Length: 106
Image (cartoon, rainbow, N blue to C red):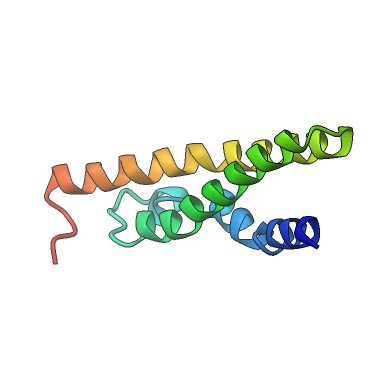
């Protein structure tokens, strides 16, 4: 039953991870417009940080189980977790860029 719950959590978190990978940190720059996006980085971080934590924990838990299938699941979880890291870095960079430029002050 515990393994079923583990795989259910990973399956239910898949849309969260997909949004974390696909969303751009600055929607305007993604369209080719040089303008600040004040809430874009936070929208990315809201999806990316929990997805990285869920799939990072899934990597550790599945790898510790030790069987071949669990090692495959651990590799897939690690792939998803690492796919979100560049988007997190870009979102944090965008937050610092907006703070340094004095933009997006409410």
